[in-house]
Image 1: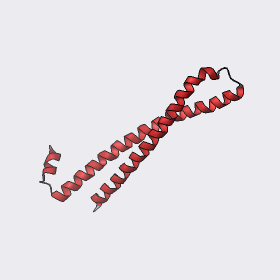
Image 2: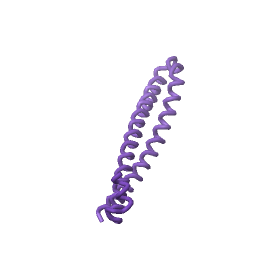
Image 3: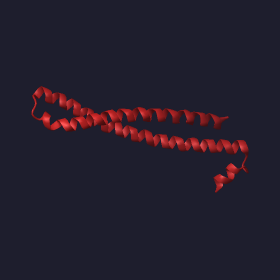
Image 4: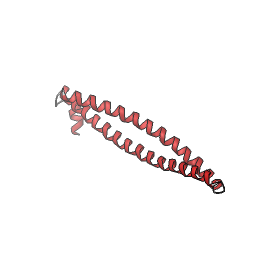
Length: 111
């Protein structure tokens, strides 16, 4: 039935988004740690050679990537929340379809 297919797809999407969220959070935590390390070493870096400063510039770019990773985490969280709500509604609709409009599920939904 279409509702079961919808529930299955939403379940799969929810699982996929949860996995993506975990990966994005791991990446964010790694880049956040890099940023912390960069900030503590920045004052010292002012006094090093030009070649070392070029390397620091690349490291700072990575810290900017940390901000992008944070935005990715927030976007995935938002998508996950939406997918979970859609899944909940699809499961509720499936229950109503299976048990009929006068079931306890339908009465709860109306309240």
